[in-house]
Image 1: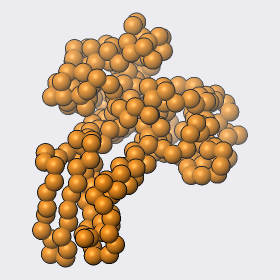
Image 2: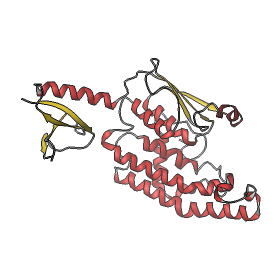
Image 3: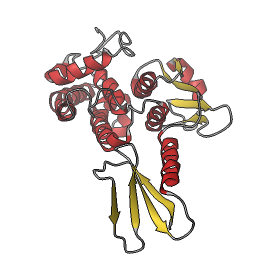
Length: 306
């Protein structure tokens, strides 16, 4: 009789109940749990007798602990400006996950005083109090970490399910590529020194002409390209969400404000109907904005008329 010591845990799809894989160092065995998307890999060591049933029970318990947060009802405050921006995806994840949080929206005039009190002099920040000092706790940064934390608190598990991790991260990568491609066209007028121009460059005739050229070319060429990448994902995954299924994931929570940003009439040389070149994306945004948890949230831009 052998004892089983857990070696690693993976979240992948399997098709058979058990299998054995040869290894140059030691044999590894796999056991299928009730979930069709998870298997446990463990090494076979001659140590102590333990029944297969007891092992399965232990590993199932461990799987549950890894899937959801163990701290109940943490006190969460998300601090950002009173705009959608990079915090909106996090807000949407909390809302769809049914997690209570304080939506702390500050005015730009308040930022000067608050800036030195934040860890890195940036927003958003998330302040977490679990009540017992257990991590994560305190004032924390990085919106990417925040949205994944929000997904971990979602008891339904639909915002970041293990079986869709690759597809979710792939979609998030495309959204990041879109945002990164747009930044020069935006910041050339806000932070011209970043691109080697004088601070007053945006006010010059040359500067205004370059800004117009960069933005109109982006909207004509780059934006449709990235929207097509996203609509292709939607089509490939069943026509509902970026990663398929009946419910959105954090990838959708990030995509919606990114797309809507271009439709609110806030940016010079960007028409608010520029997304209409891709009808599938328009339907996608409207479908998200018609969700019971989201409906009526927006007053401007695509999806606000829902």
